[in-house]
Length: 90
Image (cartoon, rainbow, N blue to C red; front, top):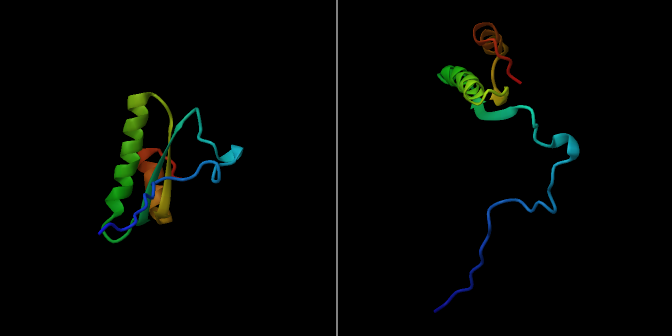
């Protein structure tokens, strides 16, 4: 017995959902997004790994890399990254 089926494609309809001009991708640098709920409770090292990865990518491609963190990175950790790694987290 055959049952009806439908294919649901992954992705977004770009005709309906498209970024505005101000949200376009940058052309003069690479934006690296890290999504982490919290950099606490044993995940502190993950923030420093992300910063190191951004620096290595920048060195490899000889292009600036902006690291954007979506999650809870305490201000003390951000300050430590800025001091030790000379990087700024947005």
